[in-house]
Image 1: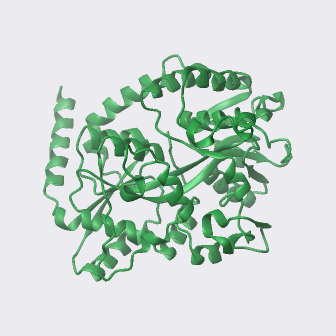
Image 2: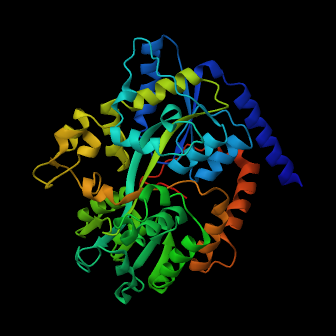
Image 3: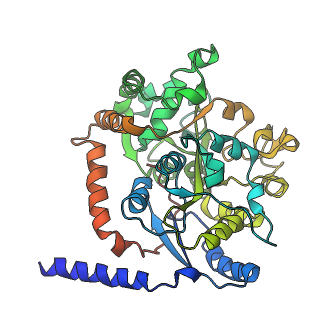
Length: 432
């Protein structure tokens, strides 16, 4: 009982401190861990005062699961000013009327939001906000694909260019799968129906909203054909196993793959990344202003600040993921004729990038992008997907149960852990 009373006393003290904040001059940012060049935080405070004549202090807080972040806003009415959810959560927040539109009137300050790639604008137009255009309520931050990170000593590119390669027993004990049911389900849903898509019977974008019993069974049956090859279902450690050659194949995000490839090169291990020929998905994270925000003006300026080309480049260098900012400055900085063959990246940068020398892990060719779908919120079918994922993994309790338990526990201690400003050296990201 004494411990409980102490916990509540600590929580009350923290809440009291939070209420004492000068919210007119405080910006509360809620972001993924290791997902920004943290030097930009202090630089924004100085820049904002230069632009507006008003001081601001950032309170920077971290989350590692989309649903935990969402529950704080949805259930706790937390007054975060700017948050960085993933695509399907933006969709859910729009439907629940949890977002404020982003006013692009910055006075004499340039509108850097105009630097967002037309491709990102196009993809955000596909977010189902129940009549609301996601581009009015969110600004793209980082994006990437899902594919295979592989050890070139143990596999050729041709060997790992199909999802069906996962069925090869050579991977037994050497295969890691990203423990991200939405990403894997949607990727496989596209891939397993490639013939029907090519025949015009199915539309990639429309089918990415589907999660019928038949669709789920199709993906589950395929997962079961190779699940005995899987050494682990990982949220973050797969890329390290790859750099240590303890694994040869990892189904993962392109950002993790890029990080692993750079780390592996330093220790003499050769890794590469490929998006399977049948198709996959692109995913996106973006900045939003939640309904209960208190400093909307500073939130708008913060988002605008991060869209400056020089800041987008610094963030990419720091975290390893790819910015949604396009434009000639980014194209020039990312081009490397000595390292990369020409590819068509005009979808992202415009006609001048029709034969650009870009890293294909970070900027896939137009041909690759054409066979990728986009992940969406599955609504009331989410529990069915979680149940399928749990069956494939062999969990004794459903993943949904774990998430619910975690939400309850974290909700009770949210106020205590919210001030966590710790930083790990390795780059991590969660898209569960």
